[in-house]
Length: 468
Image 1 (tube, rainbow, N blue to C red):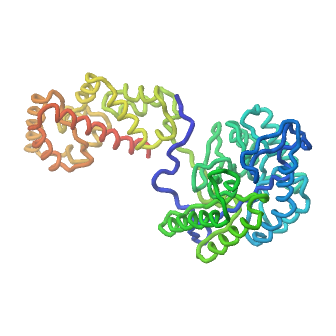
Image 2 (cartoon, one colour; image 1 turned 90 degrees about the vertical axis):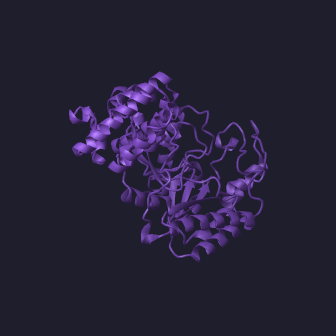
Image 3 (tube, rainbow, N blue to C red; image 1 turned 45 degrees about the horizontal axis):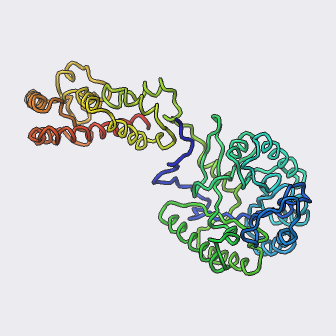
């Protein structure tokens, strides 16, 4: 089974985005322009809108218009947009514009363009795509691009559907003209997604630093709460940037929500807070996407989870000495992006090794060669073992040292029934000999457990070499 989700991302150490001017943080503000694109009988929909409004718990009204809901959306276009525009007209902003909403907003679109804001597409209609067939959603994406181009004069370079299906990202990739997709909340930095062998840049969005939480029961109640959350998010990310790991911060606004006076003040205070700090890069999402593509272009890399079984076993079958069954069982089980890293694949192989029968685990131990033994002298070690023993100087022993090793090997095997095993890359020659002398005295159960731990450590080190 191949697990589709990437649960590792950049891991513990994130890449340096190298934001322009050495900025400690990239602040990216989105205004969602949806007014006029929402569900309404007048827009050809089957029911009224029920999402992201002041009416918490509202349900669609099938076959009916909803006066209060429509007027809430009207407020966003008539008043809320202009309040946010006054606050942000000198700040880089990305508009997520629903195509049918933009078509009904010529004055607002002109103001967006005068401010130099990026206008990305927010889809054709602002509807829920979870149950809509992929073919229909693809048609809507094409219609969104075409209508957006007619309304604004240029095609959108970014795409955020928002109310997605499991097909949305794939369809966005296949459209072929987007420099970035934003339907992800998976990271604090852009990242490359590969679809059918082709890379697509993802610029993550947010649902936490987002005024949509004014419309939910567990969200923001006042502008003070919204400002506090934005400020705290900024402060944590800014501190991470000062420590050498800059990130981006996305803020999501809606004209009918943050455009209300008691909430717009939170946006104003947040801007003032940001501007008290040096090294803050306000940017559109397209600015960030283009910077990332230049600074961190897509680099294809080997992904074990995507290898054919034969190729996987050929490459990794020797990680556990002469025991390809470990690699075979790893490939036959669940694999995903987490197993494309040395640590992830080592953990999965160790899990399979621990789950093997007692006889199979003993077979892995017995498959290991004696250290500095007869196989080494005859140059019959595997490439991995040859390199490992050489790294500790075991290929250049004096006659006396060799005799000592061979005597210890013989005594060890006679007592425990398997060769002495140690991750030689973690030790020098003297340390290895000292460990042999100390461990010979262990009881076999203790030594068996230690030998198995060392086998897993050897595998981990080998995988770091194999996946460089």
